[in-house]
Image (cartoon, rainbow, N blue to C red; front, side, top):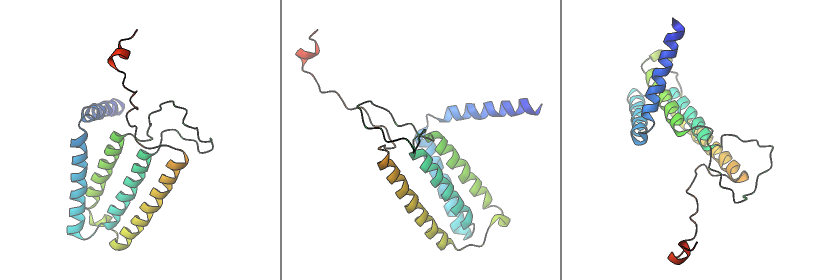
Length: 171
């Protein structure tokens, strides 16, 4: 039936995703190759600028999710640093960022195959609009990070001061 076919396709996609997770560099090099091929195709065609613009806004949105904490409530006062180590939990994982970005880039690449999906727009104006949008959203994100005292990466814990050999074995 259609339901079992859908479930088996879902299991196949999950199995493929599980196998791709460890290959961090391969995944991101593949994503960059997709972006480069889209850029080359748009430059050669000198059209489909709007598809690139929509893709850039979508990827910017996903990057903002990647930089944001998983659970946040802006109405709660900022908690001070009480010495408790809390790793940064993302709203969007690195793998999902890669997966969504890759699928969106593939979609934009497919859109360039059809002339009916091209819109007549000024590419230079779209680049300017995106630059302004990027600067504004990054400014807002950095302000939010400063106000809520978080950084979007978890560094290693501070090492405890090293003890001498005598103190280390003193029981």
